[in-house]
Length: 353
Ligand code: UD1
Image (cartoon, rainbow, N blue to C red; front, side, top):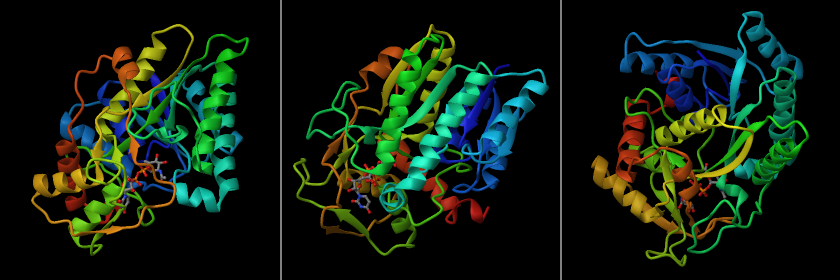
């Protein structure tokens, strides 16, 4: 049974990925600081696993700490080695991710995201663990109006959060090109992950007031916020609202595991991969679909454009599809249904449950 280290495994995408790894019979070792996530997530991952198959393996260990603490990370690797096991691969989610906050606190973002990753790969090297899937973002691209983004499209993030992702990609590429030729690395450039596990046991639980559209739609449906502000209806898109490539978090989670399996079974490799469905959905389409599928009302008003937004951010996912044996992605209806099911059952996230 292979051991996979998941940094940030208690976060939104991390927790769904851990579930997927357990379902596929990996042994999961989580490192999380729990600064931005709840400890209850761990029980929820186990509960979800049991709800799928009551005899399922629950090989899940958790180490609490930060990647910036080298001694802590080294101790985690040592502890696994002491048990005559080895970390066979790493999926690296841990990092700060709020764009607006990154503009206010760039140094925290650089320290936490870049130094944390540097420590992690150095320690992986020390312990001869060479398989890494990194959680990057479509934010590394320069958006192009009405053109799907390819892995070879022009890069150029416009905020410190995006710069840290971009920098880490460069670091990993340099590592791949180094004289030590056995690294197998992938940077997954996510588009817009939404939704939740269909059981309603696992979902997104932002610690602070959310800025992303989906939690805000759900909050509006619950009446926590009176109305949704739609940032601009004068964009050069069919209905005037911005278009994004929303992907169900369970599909995104599966992609991580499939990419890791691909790396573990391949020669030395460095991959940048877009992870999106390739389908564009406007803000207005998303709101209308959420209302229709869930039979709720989302009062909204049009507001002015948000600084830093782009009109159209959609993946060309042909590389992902050619590399992976994936034949379908969950629909925007599935995303709205599962995301609302989670929110309805857990209006205060993990706090109440
Ligand atoms: C944001 C981040 C991106 C990150 C991604 C996923 C920015 C500039 N980019 O992307 O780096 O990878 O989240 O977490 O923050 N919208 C409204 N009303 C709202 C909130 C959003 O109309 O109250 C609109 C936005 O204008 C946008 C769309 O909804 O067109 C999606 O917004 P959001 O969920 O914040 O994601 P992105 O901006 O695409």
